[in-house]
Image (cartoon, rainbow, N blue to C red; front, side):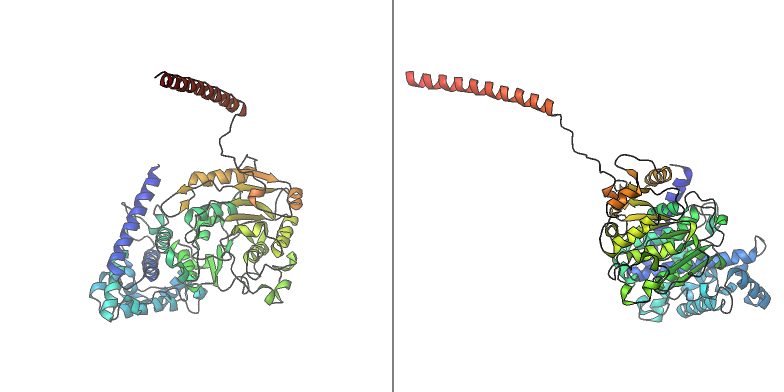
Length: 528
């Protein structure tokens, strides 16, 4: 293990211990899911406070923004900051100053609500308005979940602020939040959601994409690209897939930034927070709220060079009940709509329509869509005949929180050099952990190596001529093309027969000896 990996592990373990310490101080009447919202909201509040203060100080060690009086802020300073950062925070509103006096503040809950409202309102009338609006909507400081009295609410809020203030984002030698060894916000989010996955339905049925799976999806989407114009996740959840892509391509080579759409309001807020927490400025991301299938955004924009997605599995959608959809540019080319009870291929066609001529999409899919008949078969035929299917990868079961399904990854492309379709059986690549399986870095590298080479490897990967797929009724199941390894013990029949003959001979001899002994005994009995 490298020193960097050791530091990451140590930092991650410390972070988790500290989060549980906050939980012990705070939980009380706050259930797991709601507790997550308060911790993440406070993490976000601390980050943007530190980030904004660092912007104002601009590396001048003689300036300590938190110590300045609010009165020194001129309208010009405020306006310039909002145009650059997208929001404004007065010194008195900084996390550092509020946390310092939290235990003695009898109006802490209302003060926090006022501060959060002011931060959001600072962007009104500016280009950042939609990126800032409602960010703290799920951080309800007046909720009875925090306690029945104002005093109880304040005690719990103060405990959260104190706990988050104690989280070490800077390492032993100090430094900036964004320079830490691990994706601290992402790790905190993953840690919390994995521990409260049983309550995930409260978030609107979100299946959080674990970071190791996100890494694979992102690497597939950006493989071989020195730069991309922009990246899109049409069902972006908390934005983890977009952030993983950011790690695998030079930040400066994602020219126009990060785009996404999310149906659930809570996760929509988390996605926008996630952008800021990765120091992505408001003008480099655009996350929209709404149903990506029926209220799509970005359709009039320039197509995307990279698309990543883990859309909800087999959800219902309006489908043929809306007669206009069959004429929609996203679905019309296939000539048929995804079934009303299974929207999976609607998400696939939606993503494909947003893909640029040199783009690639990596999409998590439910296995059933690759072999079922009817409309889904017709859509597969369209995808295959138009040479858009690059690779289908089957993954191990139990990789995701809340489901044990062994999902597939469908890789779409519009610039394939040939018509072959690659199938990869990665179902045996996993490491068992307490509750879930995981993909290790070695597993991911093995998948990426064969994805890049398109090499045929027995029982693992095969590139199949399109004619064979067509003859197989456009079945795209990996198991139809990659033969599973027979792990049964090979039996040498000749050797087995020889061993049987020897055994039979020994049995025959033994029986003869026993018969002789019995005869002798019987003979002695007769003489007597």
